[in-house]
Length: 335
Ligand SMILES: C[C@H](O)CC(=O)C(=O)O
Ligand SMILES: [Mn+2]
Image 1 (cartoon, protein in one colour):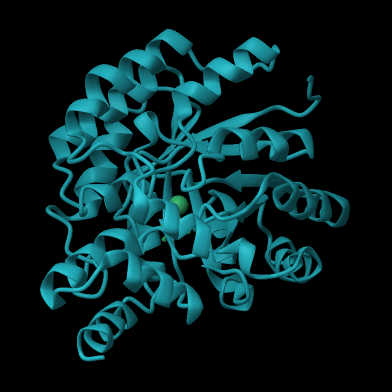
Image 2 (tube, protein in one colour):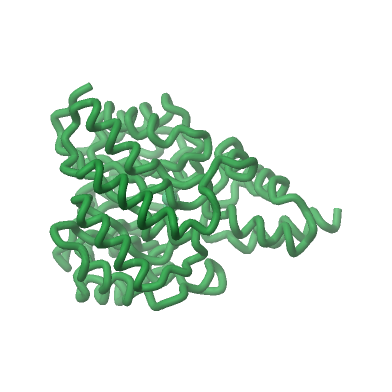
């Protein structure tokens, strides 16, 4: 397969991976991972609390250090790479975006639930005013049809987004569903299209290739898959596959492998595998970041984490409704 479009790989080990370490990265660890990513010539990598700027809270989990320290450290080590930040309007503020820009972040991804793009335009406009590359990030894209997703994507493009992402937050999309969504966006938008995958059904790399085949040119992944749920598309694997396919990414494959093996692997608190909870997340279409919250609630209330996750899927709970996890666990315990 060949592609005419320049492919931009985005690493999310230091942002989506933050969920997997319960937001306990130290600046020293951030510096080591950032230096390894820069050495591998990964063009863009993202650094913030897992839930974006301002995510450190009782609701989402407190960060070990102020995320501005992480961003500053990452920028210092970034070399030719660009540092991205995630921003969920309503969680992060415009002031936090301004400060991230001041310390050198140059890409912002403005993320909303896939039906709520209308809360993003002010933040997109501010990113553009600050001279940043701005991506719109439509989370839980499996929950609506391709044509509804297009309507939401248009809001982001009209607001000035340079890239609009199909975000498979639950790792629930099947390859043909990725194909439909990316194709619909490509046919309706003039800006670039991106894809962010999770590996809960073991489809991270495959779905990313399908997205690329349909014209997605910003592709996310993380080293060792470090991310929420069963983690993200495994970046070093994606780089190797794209290399075998003759797709130019600019990433140094051996340096990416070494970064995964020597720098990120020692940081993993648990193996990033598709265990039954992660599989249920993909199967039932649940937000991947609920995994560790559900495990904590299961322990506290003496119920099965899998049952909590299935019920959250049935209730169509979305990001920002972490309080539902406790409610469901409580209800299961008192049935
Ligand atoms: C805030 C979420 O972790 C963003 C993301 O990576 C996703 O929805 O997936
Ligand atoms: Mn994610």
